[in-house]
Length: 322
Image (cartoon, rainbow, N blue to C red; front, side, top):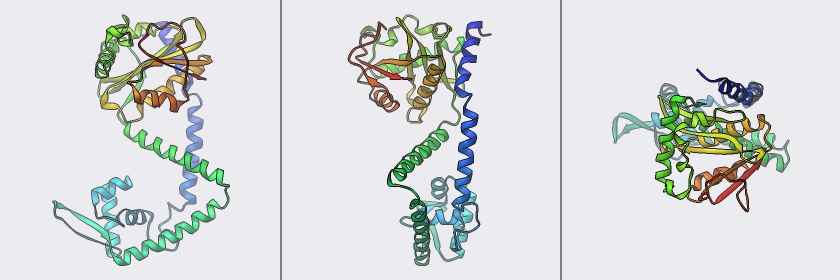
């Protein structure tokens, strides 16, 4: 059972999701509208005898032979759907297949000469349509749109990679497991306790109790009952309006999935909802990926440390305005 203080923290942490349903609803509506306006729900692409799935399959097998499995992965569809699309393309004479010499259970597909001509028509049709669309926008708007869509598609990729991982509030039972992660990651990067890094903190084995106080919170990342990472927000001593992003460590099994960015953003949202003006952190140059992440999030380098965290070996202080 959580303490009254922890219950208050959990209630406050929910503030980060208050506006999320409205945001999700708006993006879902825009995504649906985009799909409809681009004709992706139609049975054919414009006036060509191709379904959207067939058209996308043709684009993938234009320059190289691919198996059904590779096509399904490239298009993010199930194998039966990919197989059906290829079969239809072969029936129309746009594609052909042959036995895979490396795997007798699969076949390789590629475009025929007729298929290449049909793909040329498809590209001309799509280029004309997008030229008309983009002519409604200024150059700066086009650049902004491209950047935003790139961010959106990356977010979708990360969301897919994060399936099976849960970010949740720390519990007392998590203490030894998150301490293990912090010690293992610290050892991996040579951040030994004798050098003044966070791994030397005497409270490392009691993080639930450390963050069980007002205006503080700690989250862990769990998958299949294993704790694989975490991060926390706590007040910075001597600076009432500033919080500190603390104890942010990730097992190497979950790196590259966008979880660090997601957890950092969630932490900063929590900090804003608690009324902090700024968020401070200290890190070290050997954690190159972490430094780059903080810079991308908007953290600025400081000339000198703020406050007295006790982590004198962390030579890179950074802060972001909330």
